[in-house]
Image (cartoon, rainbow, N blue to C red; front, top):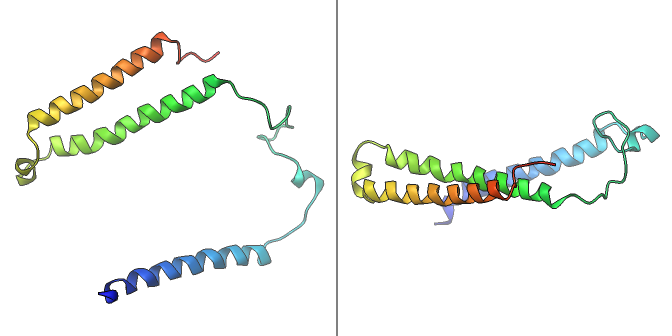
Length: 127
């Protein structure tokens, strides 16, 4: 039984050894020439404006959460589409096609309601 895990453990040990080896090697072999310019914060070639600890508007976080919400939507749609449009014996053993269609239509309806709600609350407008 333990013999089945030996290749995995060898690969895991190899990966960990490589990761640690590269970190140690870069620490000892990398050039170190600290200067004042290298110690300064970098913002796309421009001098930094203001403090790095500024407060962000709640609108920023709302947009980020909306992106995640509608991005995850596609993650659920891809496997559904693969099952729904599959051909062959695998379709006959799973749930009925009508159930899959209704399930996805309800999912899209819930997302559409959320989209309309955010649109009406002007969540997509960036001021």
